[in-house]
Picture 1 (cartoon, rainbow, N blue to C red):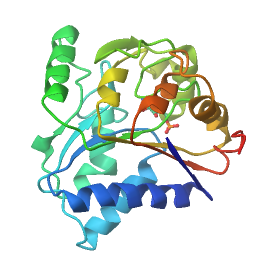
Picture 2 (cartoon, rainbow, N blue to C red):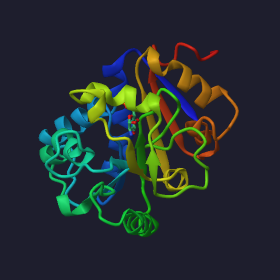
Picture 3 (cartoon, rainbow, N blue to C red):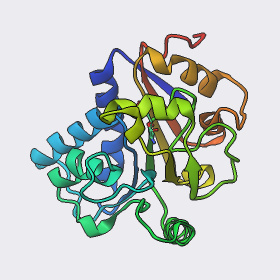
Length: 242
Ligand code: GLP
């Protein structure tokens, strides 16, 4: 694990982009694992800005995403597919046909999990972007998800529903289930870029970086990954011992 401590959110986003830029400039058909949430928005802005400058092209890039809410899809404001289009895909030259997210609207969810797992098995993700939940979740892999898990349907914890309520009109509108890549899928990426900003992530970052590797803190599994960057701002790093 390589921990990089940034001054603030903007600096975190810049440092994260330096790592991402290396991947997308060294391989024009890179495969990106992408994440939603407020944390990676600054990274995506930097990707867009550099694309606009003509520094990078995503024409041959493919992407997969971590997760989606059950019941949400294209056209739904809070769906992760719309998030990705609004915050990244619509502003770069990636072919939408080369982007994929698990579908929250599939009639047969197990079939959708199987489809996504087969897709992930056929790809070699070059870099997987991750945020982190206040309880240490990655994707929507809540505490005590087995490290061997693959794409599955998840019951969201009360804390996650509360944390994500800020994006909805009321807490009652927050979906209670999601479909998420499993921890094993995440760990298969060649490199991992986990971002965290703000004091509300400080406990999760401490447990991830300095705690035992345990299924009760899903992100702690990243200690076992051979090429993992943890880019955090000072507030998120504030509980680290050094
Ligand atoms: C959701 C997403 C995660 C994300 C987390 C943190 O639960 N499924 O992928 O990391 O929120 O979100 P934020 O970055 O907004 O704090």
